Length: 630
Ligand code: MSK
Image 1: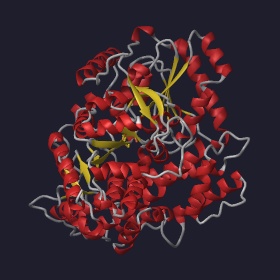
Image 2: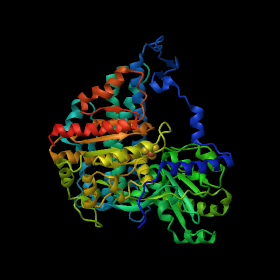
Image 3: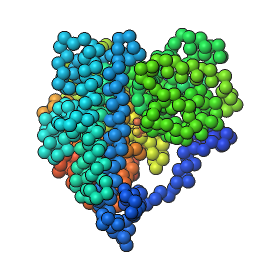
Image 4: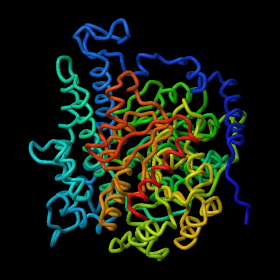
């Protein structure tokens, strides 16, 4: 067996440098260059004290000009900006969830979309107050999809999924006035509150940011996750690979990128179509190779083991290999730079969603009622493009690592029961996990999530924190680009147990898991929320007491801030490695890093020194253990 070694930053840098040489050769513009052009960043923007909500401004707060023209001070401006940032993220995740509800609503036994996990559908129905008894699969699927869609705009009541949180969480949210109502309403309320002449009280703005985050995590995102499982199957452990070395020189390469799995599921299916495989052969290729970037990649890796070519800051590298016949994108986290970059190569940059239209792309409208045909056409386009590859521009870095993925809540429970290689067993419990945590064999858990950000060396914070935490017997649950950073480094290989403390290593061996569990895409952080609530219930405590924290060390998007708000509101302290745009207000900073603790039992911690950030998390976990007397 090959010796197990983590991929080093030096190796990754070498690969990137070599690809940047190609960029220079073809005259392509890259993010590395654009970062230089944009640095230093605007201080007003960084501190959150620029207000451009009305046309009397823009107003910027300075010691000499402490109020905007309307009289709003820095605290009101920062609070409003923070809430708008959250609303952007919440709307984005939730709209993704809405698309999935619509896809489930058109599922049929003879259509492109079918129900793959009927048992889960039947388990979910009561959450929407639907009795599944005696109902035919698709009748029930459509009823659940409609009920889920109604969660977006219902005039009365709260998000139904919140009933799955601990009793104490539900009471806390109601008491603090942050129990989320209709999803769209929370976004509208956020926009309304921040319109000129409305709220400027930090406490009110931040309270709404938490409620808007909760409508994402326990509303839109959770529906995106759960109904994706119903449609495409609940993930189970599966082996795959990660890093640019998964791109194949002798095959047609197609990269799927974005977040919504509806089209990529079809593309994966049609990459095995005999007619298209024969066409690929005819064109001189040995097959059709699907790889992924960002969360669309996470979705198809979790369910089919499709290899992950990279994460957010790898997206340009994928094209720079010169071996990508098509990069097919759906929504979110897609660099507009991919358009002009693809033009420097033979790569077809295919946009598919009305939500994400970009210059220099070929737009193929994704109509879910014709998804199979659309996927067929896209794969065919890529196959036909193989002949246009310029061999002189091809350089595929060879690094890749083995990874185990697919750890949905159901799969974690199933693994804990010690049974491998069988159907997901939802009747199990987290008891074994609770036992190893209380006995101290595992000290606690960290949910490491979120993006890359050029303010941090690509993947450095994710990987260094992971190494430190597992060495201290802290198990990791991962999602989004953090999970892909781990996969590329080798931390999702089961042999990474060698890097763990003795306790965690023993658990990895007994349960046959890697020390870092890939739970899915960004919307799948909702899986983590269910996990912590179930674990708290198992221990008879509420979530803030658990030795568990969350961390987004390289986050960049509005979605990440919405996530932070619902994770904190779910009682999980959240550690950030990048400053949010709130430093210009002492009141907002104090509320987020301290005051909200009185409301929800958890707060934010911000530290850009990664070593210190890791120490702070370990310290917090140990404090919680002490408070529990374990
Ligand atoms: S893809 S939101 S860069 S994690 Fe979900 Fe990665 Fe962040 Fe996009």
